Image (cartoon, rainbow, N blue to C red; front, side, top):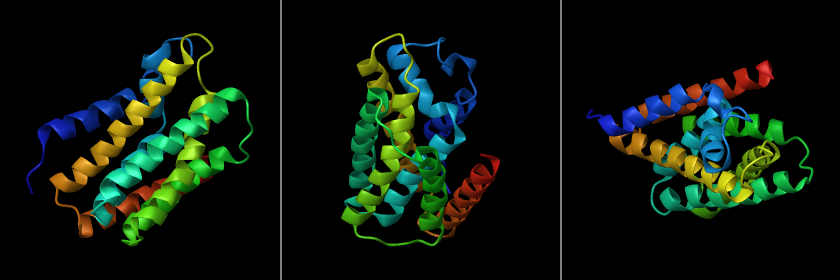
Length: 191
């Protein structure tokens, strides 16, 4: 197996930044706060990377349709959260997304691209809503939104790239899905 050092470096940096105190409200504003926010929670990181992994596993047009659907619905969810709308059980939806995406990868579930994109879109609404609700009071909401959309797209690309780099269409990818699903169970119990 040949590893892409740049991709691994980006993943390591993303994980290292996930606990950064600068990501807490009041320490960063606008686009920086938005870029950092998806990296502050293991649930967000795992779900967004899992979208890329599942997209690679499905192949074909799913490789661009799933991430595009997630990003589009993520933005809609962000607007809902920032506007004060109520999305019941959004946090449950976030944890469930980690569990289900992990299971879909682990069991190598093959859905057509359109239904798969709709499924990740539903998950994205929950993630986007959480980002919108947690938008810092100071700074530009638009820049914040662009930041968390860009960071999310980068995490999807990392999942796609990782799957392609290690040629993970077989047992490695399924094992990663199982690990993500187990993390989803842990996140649900820990919540």
